Image 1 (spheres, rainbow, N blue to C red):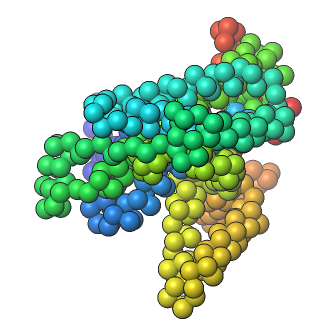
Image 2: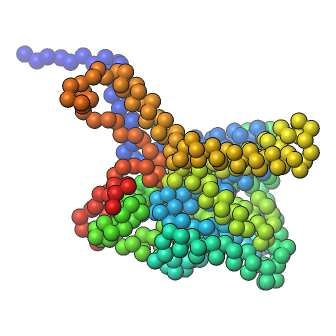
Image 3: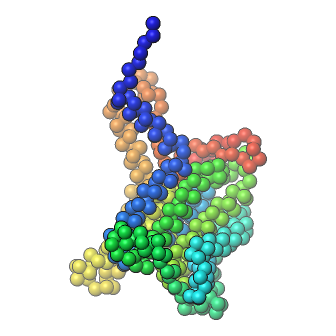
Length: 413
């Protein structure tokens, strides 16, 4: 005699929810593409609501976040400290300016951006190979030399514009972009908004690639080298190849950021790539959370918009322009100090730790005390982390020669 099982709608809904959750967790590419689609929709909505000045600020936020995202993988995931990413941005920006210097040259924009990335990748290969055996402060010192030397070199070549730099024109807005903007807003887009759209599309594409690399076998090898070089080498991982590949990927992101910088500023000169830019990028990576791409975006927004907000408030309080500017710098410095004190692992690290505490508190209220010091559930839930975050407790790296994988734990040697 057979029994019939009655499935309620609530059970079906729970099952489908579990299946979607498993799909979301097990297939990072799908997760990243969905997030990118949502982000693109948000960008379009925001750009239709802001003026040209705010669009310019959004462009600045985008290219800073692109460069910081590449540095996040290098520093947070592979453990290499670079102070020369401002100089790498210069290679991408100068390449864009040289290709767009003449109005008669109809080079497609996609080709220009790819050429800028390619040039920066070649530079990154050379620097990565030369610095592959350097660690910690020695690598930081070598890249610091790069950050100081590259802007100075540009002053002595007339082809690069000398002290004044190179001017370039913003590409014409294609008809399809004009039609879409007119359909959504009822007006033609300005060039500032068009460049902002290009910058954010570039950011979305770059971050999809970075996030998928971070969650792939390549990313696990980088993390294994970061956590324990000896164990990684014994597992068959080529340390030099891992370091160089991480540096090259980071340089490619810097090249794309430099191309967007050139389109936004319309002038490329030595002053735009001073040591201050490289230090700012490193500060964004550290304060946003080592290895967190989300933190890189958020801190880039804080860096760009917080000073302007404070200056506007200062002007409203009858402060002169000089004092309002000083107040903006002071406020940003206080924010940095507060993040360091309240969230030593960075902004996203603090958010992640807070989420774990709240989850543990909810689990403690729902689960009755168990004998023997163990919870009745048997195990604590594993947190969902940023794909590029180094906060995961265990990572499995596949060696280059196909031998047995090795699992490394952060904080162990």
